[in-house]
Length: 333
Image (cartoon, rainbow, N blue to C red; front, side):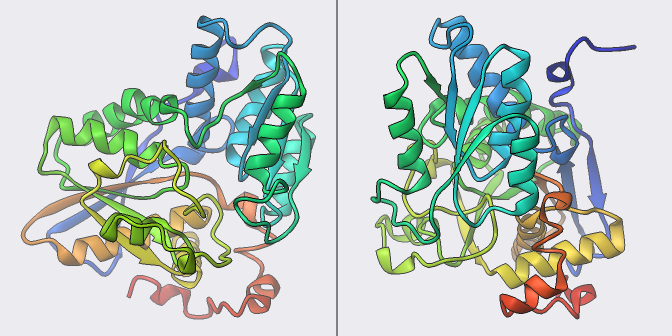
């Protein structure tokens, strides 16, 4: 059996059970391996869905330039699919993205524009605003606008959510995931709660992001914003793609907690995952400890740790950040 394009291989990723975590014996934790998508991340789903919709609606013209702001994975998916559809891509990225991600984007032929370190959300140089400016300067160009497009969460509502529900036979107590654009947790969360309103949807938010306070108190607290190293999680503004109405809880995590779990997964399960994957599994452990009675908790592993070898899996880099993973095998605690 063969396929005629990489896009045909997007989705239908496997789910595995994660053993050895310090959780009650009657709680089972599962992870959907989204890094097995052809572009290496869960963002393949969103990019394909939005491009298909834009072409169908006549918004994306043949040969048009595609512009997008990305922390790396959406950009990789765009850089993979764009040329195959006849489009050039221009991607704006934050300074903190790993060298591996940046190199992948360049290798796939994308033009990469890096925003300066520490730019404020309202700065013209912020990577999200830079993408909007480039888009406005290029008539006929197309911008996914993943942070504010309802198609982002719709992609997960129509693909990721149904896959998870079917793979686990509907036996789900909670879905736990970090959010950046909010597409995954909003789309999957909405689908699962429509199937069963008792399913808990737990957002994981890095210390330094706005989401946790906004969920619990309904306000954006500027003092919450400060630098953190986990890529693809949290935000310094509230994008309209994030649907807080489907969430039942929010838990904060630190870079230390996320990265320790990354090392534990690599050393015990052979799973080399990115920081959000580590955060997601750590969050599953926290959610499991709150469960009463038997429970099934599921999450996603959005991307591969191969894109973070110079950061999360570099002892020298970790020491520079003041992060210790020497006791990574105790990360489950």
